[in-house]
Length: 117
Image 1: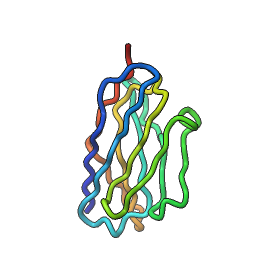
Image 2: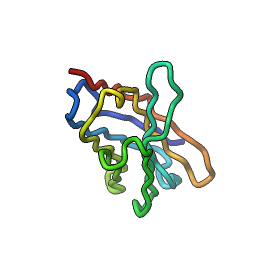
Image 3: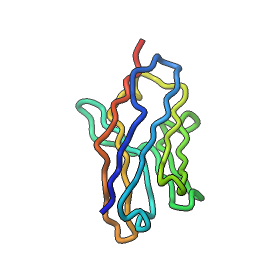
Image 4: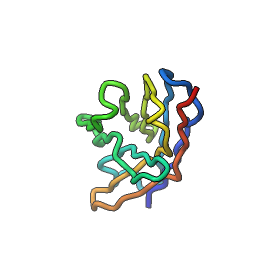
């Protein structure tokens, strides 16, 4: 089992920045890929960014490319999402996801990000 706890959400003005953190615990040795997803009201959950265990490969949704950066610190068992130049359309609940080597998916509880003036 893997437990994920997100933090760092909040209210920010358009053009501002936030950094989300996702701390993993439990069977962390089994994790191969971690990522961030988001879900806005009335919309389906969508991929934001993913990163492999070694951090050598990252993937981003077109809507966040050039603005968001995903990174991980394996020593701290933590994945980060640096979000810059935030837009109102980035408003959503952001979820951390971990996928094990056996393709089991684990989700965090989510953290709210609101971009508004």
